[in-house]
Amino acid sequence: MNWTRGKTIGRGSSATVYAATCKISGETFAVKSAEFHRSEFLQREAKILSSLNSPYVIGYRGCEITKEPFNDGEATYNLLMEYAPHGTLTDVAAKNGGSIEEARVSRYTRQLLLGLEYIHDSKGIAHCDIKGSNVLVGENGEAKIADFGCAKWVEPELTEPVRGTPAYMAPEVARGERQGKESDIWAVGCTVIEMVTGSPPWICADSTDPVSVLYRVGYLGESPELPSSLTEQAKDFLGKCLKIEAKERWTATQLLNHPFLLTKTNTEPVLITGLVTNSPTSVTDQIFWRSVEEEEDDLDRPSWWECHEERIGVLSWIGQVVADPTWDMDGADWITVRRNND
Ligand SMILES: Nc1ncnc2c1ncn2[C@@H]1O[C@H](COP(=O)(O)OP(=O)(O)OP(=O)(O)O)[C@@H](O)[C@H]1O
Image (cartoon, rainbow, N blue to C red):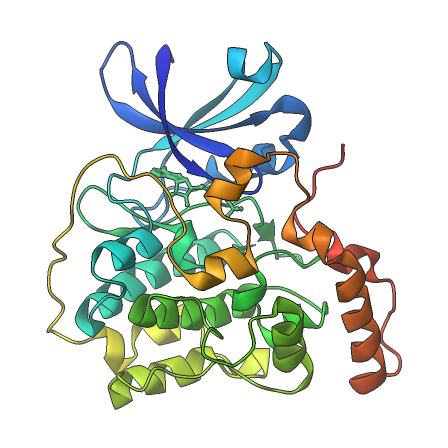
């Protein structure tokens, strides 16, 4: 496709996302770019996204290698995607005064689960990084799952390092044991909390330290606090997502039949259109992962995981002692989270 790169609309740990315009049709789309030699996760994401086709998953438009002046003429890997004009669920909550009302949360959650039901059951894929900032809102206000950089095929299940964002990790993921479809469902519960409160879970848990949160989730059997403002129906729904035992968690299909999602009071969202630029909005954005501003200042800084490598190693050791004396102490995999092999 012949296209022109436009404004930066988002910046994550692995890539930068730009608006772009097709020179022939004039269509706006999004292009996620990374230096070729650091694009392992982006290439993996492109491979997975190219195999998906659902109204609740961001659309794949192709991939290309270009030479870009901003990369000193070095090869750049580009993933071309459908453009989501309303930004992420995190952006929508921020624009809506910091939180989203329950009826709309129910509507977005239903769409998120329709996307998950499709990738889990039809494609055998676990997303492994469901959170508000990885769910985009499309032109017609529908939630669309994005950022498949951590996703993996789970049928057949292979032993792979755990990935994702600490605040949304299920107990089995926090312990570094396994990560599958059930772990995505835990993250859905965390995302519902994020939509309702405007912050990722655990912000009120008198602990702003990701490592201690992982310890509490993984070894003390704790789950995030449920927002008191929620109806009993919504709390019951969260209870089905946030079961400590992965096998007891409801599947996406079961959750789609929960009364919380069958409510008739869902209102059409009022969304502000326009180019959305990603910016962190909550305290935990700065605590649990790097902020956009920080990245712009220093793109080569180590990621959160790299900064906390030593401490996570300690957590693995605590886990070994507390939870399972036979636990495999090979923590190397456990801490290799979204790091390219460069
Ligand atoms: N298709 C799109 N349309 C509009 N905005 C997008 C699109 N894709 C990504 N963005 C914006 O760019 C941001 C970063 O994208 P993405 O999460 O895919 O990058 P990442 O490097 O994988 O991030 P992370 O640090 O979460 O791993 C998103 O939070 C969103 O604001």
